Amino acid sequence: MADSHKPTPQQRRNALLTAGVLAALVLGIYGVFMLKVFSA
Amino acid sequence: MSTATHAHDTHGHDHAHEHHGPPAGFTRWMYTTNHKDIGTMYLWFSFTMFLMGGTMALLIRAELFQPGLQLVEPQFFNSLTTVHGLVMVFGAIMPAFVGFANWLIPMQVGAADMAFPRMNNWSFWLLIPAALLLVGSFFVPGGAAASGWTLYPPLIIQQGISIDMTILAVHILGASSIMGSINIITTILNMRAPGLTLMKMPLFVWTWLITAYLLIAVMPVLAGAVTMLLTDRHFGTSFFNAAGGGDPTMFLHIFWFFGHPEVYIMILPAFGIVSQIIPAFARKPLFGYASMVYATASIAILSFIVWGHHMFTVGMPAAGNLFFMYATMLIAVPTGVKIFNWISTMWKGSMTFETPMLFSVGFLCLFTIGGFSGLVLAITPVDITLHNTYYVVAHFHYVLVSGALFSIMAGVYFWLPKWTGHMYNEGLGKLHFWLSMIGFNVAFFPQHFLGLAGMPRRIPDYALQFTEWNQISTIGAFIFGVSQLLFLYIVIDTIRSSHRKAPDKPWEGADSLEWTHLPTPAPYHTFETQPVIK
Image (cartoon, rainbow over all chains, first blue to last red; front, top):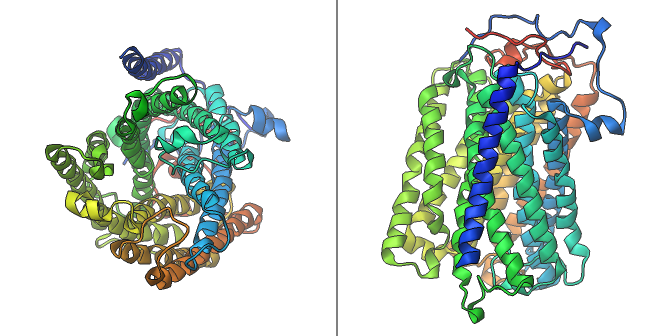
């Protein structure tokens, strides 16, 4: 059974960047929400 | 739809000298980073939870076969309705669609695997402790959460340790969903085959891309809501406690800001599956591909501004009620676009009705009924009358069972040959469809009448005049429930039936990469070299 092709370095970089932005979005939504309600 | 330049030359299934298969035994599943293995685990997990949630549903229906208390205590009945909802939403429907996403998205975009295979493994294995917490909460003092799946305070503040278990379970499930969504978006945006532009992607990939964004946006909100519940219970805050200056209504706003997009999280991938199946069996390209994409995005955007229709009775200002009423009705427009596009796809098509198509047509008919009863409930004065009645129960089961679940069944029958290399038994598949169709409608259509007559939901007992329709509903529920054991048999039989070899492309009209570019069954490692799409 042959192995699959590997993502190119460019694809890896872009994937990490996309995931970083999305993770920041998630943490941002949760963080702002929590800061807002717990500081009120 | 896209066409690929390669035939079956890129998968490498003939390269026996390069043997690099999966490890054997438990470690294969524990440590796997292969999207197909993880997809398979999601699907089996989802089916297991479906059977658990279904058993709870049958207990509920058995209790409601007659007025009075027969089988279970009222508190346990409330726990059953609560955990049934949580298990079906978070344990059955959502993981099933993630299972499909894992199996299909890499193959449909020409990628080797998901962008982050180890995180993919984590996303799945987080489900197990969450499920154990959820189901295990039945066995702690005080019993499982009994507040309904919406976890409304103040009731939720007052119950025992099972609520903390439920809150932790929801947090873990949310983390799993977020990791899964990041993986899906990253894979679709970055790992597509050269030439596969966004507007050439199969509709299933599009619907999942949009669903994953919805999950990213609303899962942190749910996490925030249950964090607030937790601090109200244990850390002296009073967000939702009127005695401490809080407001239980605030929880409703926060919960439904998550909860309504959640409904679309459970139905958009269903639209994607049906959009793959109907063209395949109509032997025509999907009618209005671009409008399908835009309609999906419109539904997702609108889902953020309609949460108030779940709470018309809490005393919002009339202007608020009017806004949510009209915004909700607006969703019928893009949904109608989809329905008419599916019908137009079938129009003058060379149609055949194998089991996946039967479930898809069943989906189309019954989901439309669920959509219409949703429009009825969107009308504020009507909803004030029907709120918390069985009409609502009938409505959302038409959306989530004959909508989401029927599409899952359709998808399983459609892709089972690709997954296993064997054809399912068509006769038994059709029997499963008709038993499900009849059982479902007998179970849930009478609930419209019960609701219109004023029977409240989430009660173990009811007035005598509701008896007949409840008995019919219970009979239907048992027909539907038992017929799912037939589904289990069909799937196991297909896996084992090596004499029913599936051809590479068993469905004449199927045109996405997994059918045109890969052998059947799909090899463990797909795409030795990445395909190029014209």
